[in-house]
Length: 504
Image 1 (tube, rainbow, N blue to C red):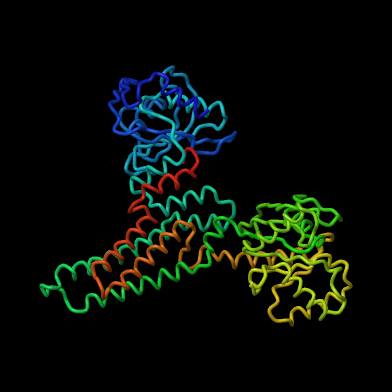
Image 2: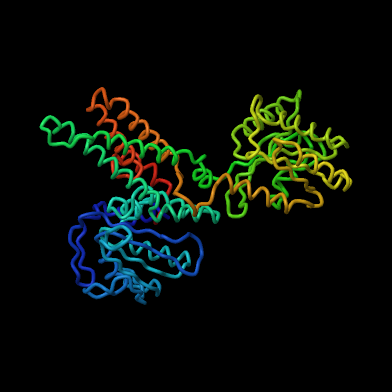
């Protein structure tokens, strides 16, 4: 469909900006910039679809297709109109039309929206009609948002927040994306930018005018304090344990343990569907089985892995290698053990489980109990008295991760396990609505680390060469500007906007 629109526009071989139109007696001159259009709502049948156009030809499209008079309609006011083909005058649909004159629009340009019925034939007809308006062409992915950025309506952090909001699948992701789109993260970086500019201005003033005794004593000492304060704030911002990035991309939760402990059964229980094959034959799972879950509003990428054991089978050995590799990369590991394998004595069972944890976790690594959950499956096979003794003993042993007794067969204990899992995931992601805004993108972190290093250059050269020290502050400013798009943005624009859908 997309290529058809291009053919409709370019089949004449004449560039759109060279068309002249007298649609309904209203002349249309040469456009200063290309105008774009696209379906902005989702594809497929729906009650209402939104088709958006932006650019100099938007007013022409409004007149040609909605029968609006020469004078512009009231801005941001719904008008019920018959939508017509600009060439044949055939009525395509009857819907609402909104006029957004620039610069008070999303893109900063004149824009129009057609709210039409959402049938595929109606949408296709309206898009084809827009394609026949002189100066109009189909929008590329993310082009509306790119124009909003170039018009200064959004900085890059807000653009990325908008992209995250479009792709948000859980409640926590929505909250974090909305907070970033509202500009909180950008405002923080802009504040740091203004403070760095002040530092640079004072240093350069000292370099230029200190010999003329026009600069007060102590100016550089004041800059030293400002730089130290900024470094401390950035260091706290960087030491967020990647909560924002983890929330944006999903918490990596890995199910690991010995063969036939019930790992695949646990995956199926959490998914509420047969995502993995379950059989009494040891070593059934040989590759990573992944599924995405929403755990209390937080995104989780859950992975079932091969049972950890020595095997002569080459394929199973590869599965075990991949399982251990995935455990090393995990944000949270669910170590599953079979209750039937536990010694009847509670103390011996605790020692057995400690050894089991060491066999699952990477070698020579102290277990981080906040990154582990010990899941004892098949609790229905244990007598009630033995369960209570085991639970009491494990609570007494120090350094043990949280322990959950469940039965994937009877579903006993699953609700309590989900409560503990949700608490662990929430701790890893943090509350997206509380505290200072967190980093959500790897590129933010990279530029902030460069900024931090550049400020260290100021401190390193401050007493040796003030010009080099000032260059450190200047580099720090450049790094911050690359986050918001205020400095050196061209090389990263394509990377950011390519993830947007057509029509946004």
